[in-house]
Image (cartoon, rainbow, N blue to C red):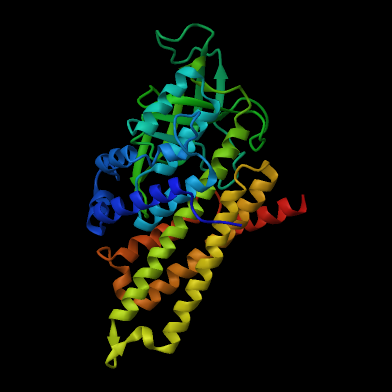
Length: 388
């Protein structure tokens, strides 16, 4: 099989790599991380103009890509440069749900997202849910009157109550997509609905904080948040399937991002090994270090195969897709931890300083393993899906 990029994807990769190598320096990123917003609006707009967000959506949705290999092409370059801007949260998660479930009015927001003029955040995970995608305790009361404003007609309002944890990009988002339960037990996949909640809605409160790997998140509280019925995305009680679909796409984006980050880590290590001298010659010529570096290159090839496999199965039936995605997440999680540890050890103390590129890259690799399930979670999920 031919795994070479198509001409269009190769052009996108080349353009994105050139832009990020010129624009996204270590000093620039550190300034972004230390800022109040945790992101650069200027860089976000420029990347949107380059078509980075549009590449993550199909032509029917207003983009020009949307396939698994479009996602991996974009996110591998974002990972290679250690980009902290919330493409995963705004485009893959938030934009993906609006594209799948939104009506004509709601999909107008998607055009703004693709153009770089709007941010989204998915408020789904809760303090007790851990990695269980179906565990939702936030409640919905339909036809309630608590908190209803003049724009809410009697009998048509929806009231949300609950808490959401580690909602990435919540502070910058113009709208939050909130999951809430309309029926069933707390861990039942059926009964979950999704709602488009504008920022600043009365009863919606955020407690923001910086993330260790860059960017910002928030703890979100919904206290009698009252919305019109038109705020619902899709059908009542039918939100889980769409959630599972966008999280699978997010998983593929994450493994590609970690792949790019691992390549940067190994390149930095190679340069360091051939520059740092001991006993009059580069330390990379010492056999012990040369063997350790060679092992990293072998691991990278295995990881790339897993990324390609996951991207190729993204549009398959869910049981096949999820099996391959969990296999990739497990492998990338193990390889990523190995690469982060080995590259830091071969560098020594300089690798732990904020001014050096590897420090941030290693954080991105490590923290990616804790979104949507860690290595152990995906191993157990792979076993369960294989048995099924």
